[in-house]
Amino acid sequence: MADQSIEAAIRKILQEELSGNASSSAATTSEVQPEGLGNGIFTDVNEAIAAAKQAQEILADKPMDFRNKAIQAIKDGFGPYIEYMAKETRDETGMGTVEAKIAKLKNALYNTPGTELLQPDVETGDGGMVMYEYTPFGVIGAVGPSTNPCETVINNSIMMIAGGNTIFFGAHPGAKNITRWAVEKLNEFVYDATGLRNVLVSLDTPSIESVQQMMQHPDIAMLAVTGGPAVVHQALISGKKLSVPVLVTHLQWLMQLLISIWQPTTSSRQLNLTTKSYVLQKRKSLLKHPLRMNC
Image 1 (cartoon, rainbow, N blue to C red):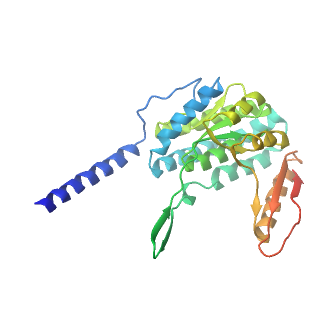
Image 2: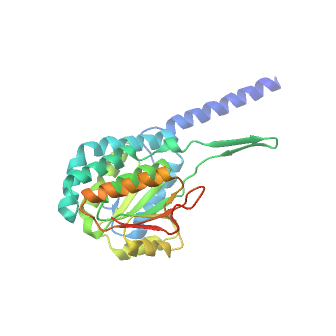
Image 3: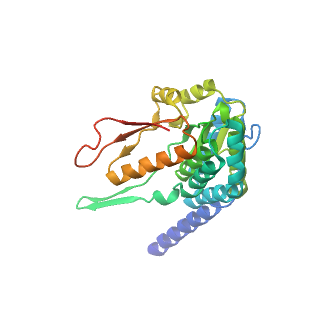
């Protein structure tokens, strides 16, 4: 009888867990979320980050299928707008060509990795077994350029949502209109598919000061900065974990990097965005100094 009781208890627990997972992967979330001005746009840095933090806590409790739904909604939603985004970005910033921007938008939308890279790793040995799983950082502070505003919104959002993070996005004032459009659309797509708001937040009036405030905010877990030397410098002295440097370990990868950097820049009329790549070759030094390219 004791064994039967234990078995019944185990079956009950498993059933509750399985039904809980099924309900958590449903398309809606019942928790009340702030709306601000709507679709991820707020007037205050603190309010925006608080909304993103709440969304991140909800997202972190959802199964991986929930993240995949959000990512697929982004891809399906932005697909018909690629040419529109390219033209609007060119018109607002006056930089680049529509053709080059279409190519980069397609690359960001369809080639950005998602949850498929987050497979757990396991090590076994005489001492037992260890499993490594990837966990979210939290709210990531991202800064976008005027050269590739929509591409950066899409690329950052897909990668970061895949990891269970949400994003505060600091738009470049020179591309604020198309960036806001992209932020609002992305939130619309994700909400329609999952019921979750504020996976990506931004301000109605972007500024350098608001980006600096965001970088110092205690609820920003790390930074991902795309831009010129000034904004990168601000990120480097912020004390936050930062995603900027590039490490290349094979000659083949180096050549692909050079091609990837050069091709978009020639078609975008030599846009002035400084990229530094630190190169390390496995067996002998390929370059003794950092490689600096103006693109």
